[in-house]
Image (cartoon, rainbow, N blue to C red; front, side):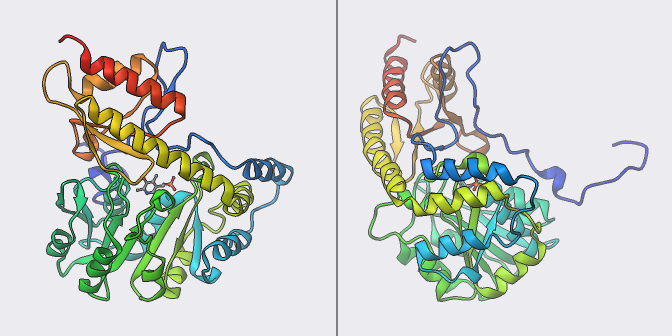
Length: 368
Ligand SMILES: *Cc1c(COP(=O)(O)O)cnc(C)c1O
């Protein structure tokens, strides 16, 4: 405590553990493979890159504050009403705006044990209280979420699929959760990895948003579209929620180069399909190969996988992380996600995937 009076952030802000992103470098290693942030190994669509470069000629002009062209492109691609879409500087921007618009002091927002860390950060930043609902086998548990609801609950955050577990719940379960929520509770479905999921019991949330008054769905261009550096996301929601978000968002929260690249990325369905196919092939291969080494892998439908390491000295997650880093393979430690014995690895290029499996084989085979 300082003796002198000084400006104080609102209660809750200093309770936030600062978000620590995945490492991006392996010091002293000639060639690094970043598998720590679920970025696309195929990169962005060449059309998106061309649109981004062309936007460089207009950097002196403010962007269209409504991101009209991008909302129209998204609406066309998904069959949505463009007036019920808001774009943001990444879905992080939108998740924070949702929290700011709907959470006040003493309100509660629910997320699951290993849920995406942005939810408690956004909640605490608004002076509200994050409430944690336990998962079952690293999967969101609808009954546990419902049991966590109180008179103060204003938001339920659900990442489907979830990061860092890679698991999802079927649309029936999503619907069951929604049906049991009071109509004043906002149900936020974060479908950042929706494009990677090929299960016929999965639905990203569009149908639920379209047919109810208290559901929003957030999407991102950071993952399958390979535009993480640009910061671009969007949300689809009921008109009254869209109106509230539009009132508090930054008037130019999405840059012109991001809008231009996003329009081109949405239209390049062939690039999205290539990325999806690459992921499906290598996610399956990695899961099988890594399990064969005696490392437990949680079944994932995303573009990453969760590896559970033995607790024995010489085989721990922390030691595996250091071992991989020395070989230029950068993966994600998950202590902040309450998974200290696990590592998350993104599906990379063929080269990175093969190197990762070879390094893990060496790690598990070495004498302790
Ligand atoms: C990566 C990710 C996002 C995307 O965040 P951006 O701000 O759009 O880059 C959102 N939610 C989850 C669960 C994620 O893993």
